[in-house]
Image 1 (tube, helix red, strand yellow):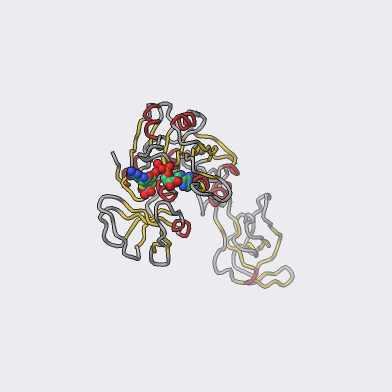
Image 2: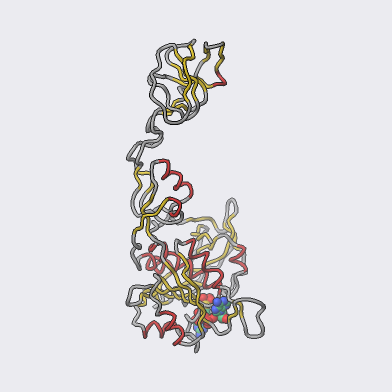
Length: 377
Ligand SMILES: Nc1nc2c(c(=O)[nH]1)N[C@H]1C(S)=C(S)[C@@H](COP(=O)(O)OP(=O)(O)OC[C@H]3O[C@@H](n4cnc5c(N)ncnc54)[C@H](O)[C@@H]3O)O[C@H]1N2
Ligand code: MOO
């Protein structure tokens, strides 16, 4: 029975548990999701440091310059009232220093320093991040900034969930993978779009296999057991060459979502094979496959990759889009400063609109109003 679009996405998110935890060097963690919360191993800054290039001073001026402190490991020194140390930004300040007088506010006559620090210009130990403070939550996706932060607070390795491996099976005797199609042939448009969609959702493409429109070929391709998810493109409908549902039946798969009330993409499906691998059926019409990729495949991969759900993005739709009675519409659109603007060219077989768009606007059944959820493309 067909599932509503919202319920289908929820079903995809709960159709599996996050994959095992692995420990990887920072450089290999980009794009993976943290398996646990990340507490700071050291405070930031580690000790009281100068926030400006200038002079660390104690007591009222004028001061006598007695030494120099540069950034880097150094023995602690104590500063006495009336003394100054020339100091670089980031250098530990001498014990007892009350302020850093920035170079621009100072005047030096031989070893005598004058000026007014105004503010202390000192970053105190732990002022930015105290030791032990949770800086990122389990389920956060490791971004370039997160890698820099993890290094700042002392990490060399991170515990993350491994990426789900995805095999793509493209079915269709009419498909051509390169060159100009001749009468009756069609260039495969889904094989090229899936690697990016899979990577964005936290997965890793294992390989892409092309199979003929025969039940036996599809069955054989589904037998591989070295991946977590298999995305089958085409063969989801009810025609004489559409074998996915009968093949899944013969393999005793548990069909979790059997069609979704959305346009395009309604014949899509999600199933669990007896050995735990998940199968997502993406309709053959290329824009329908993209829409289904964002409906079932991406949420399933997010979950397996251990990513926390994000709050939905919304915007105001500019244009009169006719909602359907029972189905959610997925409409390619661009985001402007103040609105979501549909781009058209969005028939199920045509990726032109989606290629011009930066989001899919989600128009629920019987929707009226302006605010819609959008899925970034
Ligand atoms: N009697 C019905 N017929 C159809 C229905 C329906 O409800 N009742 N739904 C239509 C919708 S909607 C879709 S979507 C398609 C889904 O079909 P399949 O998933 O079985 O896919 P195919 O039949 O193999 O192909 C459909 C269409 O897409 C082209 N195609 C297939 N694969 C690719 C590819 N990799 N790259 C580019 N184009 C591809 C194929 O040549 C066909 O034109 O079913 C409708 N029919
Ligand atoms: O629903 Mo189909 O998937 O429109 O092309």
